Length: 337
Image (cartoon, rainbow, N blue to C red; front, side):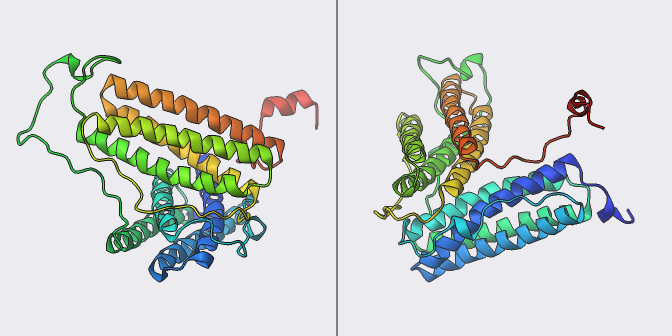
């Protein structure tokens, strides 16, 4: 279509550009710090690649929004990261964080791509999918070469295809249950890895936050992460399936702030929303009533934690809202002309 780049941005395009920009703004701060503190050159190269991708994508999104008279998000910047602070996380954690955020980015990019009409917006998300694949390949190869990659469990499976014969396949909340299937094992493994990374992240944040309420919020997040790791580990333990763990300590003993409280809260709220989406997918894939019930309890806790975090951010003036739809009813009732 001629002049397709001049079409008005759709609500989905604005929304996906906004959430991508905000995610890259948080990621850019974290990656900039990781690059400055990295001791391993191969891991530094992975994180540098991630930072470069985020910075370029933010510039591309800002150009599109500006050309359409849309506000560019404030996001986060140099004032939200202290490169002079000592190392707060190990290089191993920086690598795991890059792998985790790359997965998140690939999901957001895919959603954005399939809901975009304008060629310039599609290009942002098309390039984003490709960048995520290349970064994941780079990070995975580095993790494998260093013996740091945490593989999903290796299990024995029957030699022949199997068809479900009884409704009891789904089971009940209590009582005996059939063995896990490999799709559930994959979902549980992913949740475990994300909780291991998230718990380490929030522990570091709790050590360095200025505000006491924010510090307590992060400590609560670490407790929630530990609880979720225990619940998920028990699901694998019951089947004698190996439980993944980090090969070394991920957080140092530094108490000097590397990031602003605002940025740390923004990062945790982003991770929280991704966690809710992951749990929702896991519920759909579980096909076992007791596991679905466990996940629903975990989701309720994550939702409440996120709501409390949003209230703290609002109270401190840190909560940047996505563009909202104009309420014609409110305009009419206001009497303005």
